[in-house]
Length: 279
Image (tube, rainbow, N blue to C red):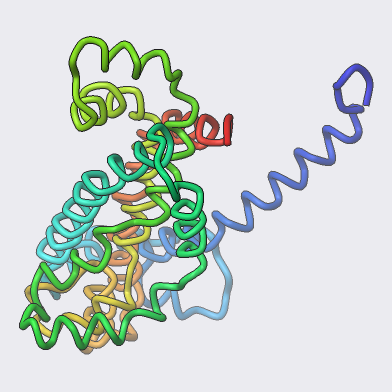
C-alpha cells in the first residue's frame, strides 16, 4: 500500500474476490429466471444448457398467474409489508429520538436493553405470541401478520445511530421556536432521516415479504396467503413437478424486491453509511 492506495495486484485480487462472490450470490437467481423461460422437456433434460432452445416464457408466466391467485398473494404481501413498515416507523422514530437526544436517568441502561433485544430471535417468542393472539381472537387475519412486528428493535437502533449524527444546535433552534418534542421528531428529525428510513425500509420489506415462518403459523385462509405461502401453495396444488411455472411464480415473488432495491440503492448505501458515523 502506497499513500493509502492499494498495490495493483492487491486491487486486482480484491476485485476478483468480489466478482466471484457476486457471481456466487446471483447464480441461483439467474438459474431460477432462466428456468422459468424453458419448457418442461428442457428443464428435465440431462444436457445442461444455460439458455433455452425453445422459449416457453409466455406459457409459464401465464400458468403462474392462472393456476393460483398470484395477484392476491402479491397484494397481501404489499399490504402486510407496508403496514408493518409504517407502524415500525411510527414507533421507532420517537424511541430513537429519545435515546439519542433526550437526557434522562437510565438512558444508557435502556439503550443496552435495546441492544440485548437484538440477540433474541423471532422464533423464541412465536409460541407465546401465538397463544396470546389465539385468546385475543386475532389469528388468521391481517392483524396477526402485522402486530408482532410493530416494534422493531433493529429499527430503533438504526434510527438512534442516525439521530446521533444530527447536530444538537438544530434541535435547540427548534425548541427556541416553540416546537415540542413530538413536533421535533416529525417535523425536524423525520425529513433529515430519509436515507436511514430507506435503508431500514429495505431491511424491513425484504424480511417480511420473504417471511415464511410466522405466516405459516398464523394464517389458515388461502385469501390471506403472503407470497412465500403462495409459492408453496402453487407447489402443493398438483403443480410441484411443473418446474417452469413454479420458477416463474418464484421469479414473480422476487421481482418486486429487486426493483425496490435497485430504485433505492443509492439512498440505501447513504443510510447505512451515515448510521455509523457517530456512536
